[in-house]
Image (cartoon, rainbow, N blue to C red):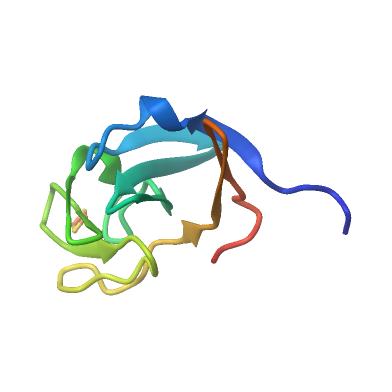
Amino acid sequence: MSENPYVRAAALSDLEEDTPKRVEIDGVPVSLVRTEGEVFAINDICSHANVSLSEGEVEDCAIECWLHGSSFDLRTGKPSGLPATRPVPVYPVKIEGDDVLVSVTQES
Ligand code: FES
């Protein structure tokens, strides 16, 4: 497949440190998180119930669901504690200049 799956999701300069930003990429809700010098892309819907993770807090390279407190690792999508037991998909990110590019067709 030669098609480039990466889509411009946001401007890097629009992302504030530790403040998630919700975007939609090809109909997929994604939370972009700039933290610890990197940008991560994680599906915006908690795996426990249908709530937006981008409304949660970021700490130690994880995003915490505001509803019941499960925390998801931004690198792997894995929850570190109950009540969520299933991971949330995470997606590969590339930075080109001020463009944040995300591929939602491949989970990383
Ligand atoms: S809805 Fe996210 S932990 Fe319950």
